[in-house]
Image (cartoon, rainbow, N blue to C red; front, side):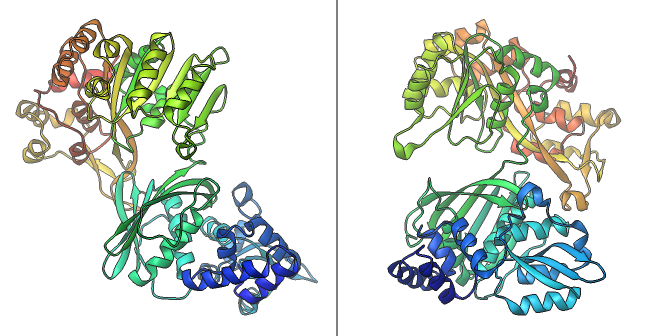
Length: 581
């Protein structure tokens, strides 16, 4: 946006896009919230961003380019040698393409502020070219800079100082870096003297930047401005109540959806942004891509192809339940069956013959209301994002009883606990026993970086601290060479962490006649789990974690994130049998 509010306001009034009263209100609020006039007008919904940029480009006689389109295909990748990175970052500019022949030397430069004659002069002096400015958004320019200069993903904590206008740069940089690093969440935590920004990468929060606490009101305001879209209305002036919003945009060349949550805290609003990179999630595989053990995968395939009944996927928030459900849908979807999903929100676009519906609680469109409508749509398969209340559970149960395949999620610590959870919600135990087909519990653990992995045999104390039985420790240490125990030493590819990527760890209980009888009698979770373990040779999730450690997929340290349970572990040989068919 241009820096001279007088010129921008006068231009928009002259074009009859806004009124004088609207300009006066925007000028008053921009001072209050330390935002540029253009952004304040957009937030107040007096003008759209596209209309403003289109008006500016026509008035200034410069083109407006969507430089991020097709993953910055328009940008000449050789120009990183022409204009230094620090110049682009300092001035928020990006070289697009260059024409050099006997008569002309011209550089097309994307700029957020075409009035910045000093920047144009500086770039012309460095490149020895006449600069042809074009208009582009700051977010697109910053994404292009990262793409053009191949900025590495090593995490270096950025420290920001008090400078006017820093809020916009901090937020844009925050979102760009999160996408580049593959973060799932951004945590903005205000403290007494500073605000710390952390990002959840491969399930672990890592600090990435720090800025003075005096800047935090402007940063929080900027985030709320971005999060005030058509389906959200965050009030930038209200800092006393929790709020929710959504950001949709292109960052680092990727189409990203974000869910924003604010929470009043002692030193200001704590902000958490959950990111969903649609470009990275464009391909969701099938069941084989979940990396289950061969035996478990075979059992799971049989369960999901059962003609009717409920298949449950359980685990904490962020454990990959939605990914698992969509892998199942991809597995069973075909032209001959009707598949309908109801989710909050829709994260993966399934495509094909799958129909997806997203909840809108503010409009009264809840899970129960959606399911009642879906049941009139002649479905064969129904995916329910989560069972949260009795009404939703009752409709899901009735759907299963009337011949439908139902897939849904619950929040429980283990697979056996899902049956008790449905009963606690209010479903009769005899209905739970007669409709459920399977319960899959899962977690995500970090994988060893294959670039810097080395063999590592842990000590007896380390194995004991994790909770491994003493007889298993003897088995492991007696002949450690027969296993592939590894750890990562840390390298540039894994940001010195020793880990790269994550994988699911699973515990599957299929509802056999014995399990069905126990559920019908309302037996305890422990009794159900131990019966499944004895009769169906089920590996508990901790044992599955040990299998992945012994086969070199993960480290011993990652096993501390898996629930141990109070049971005697199988022998190493029995645990590793699941790696075979």
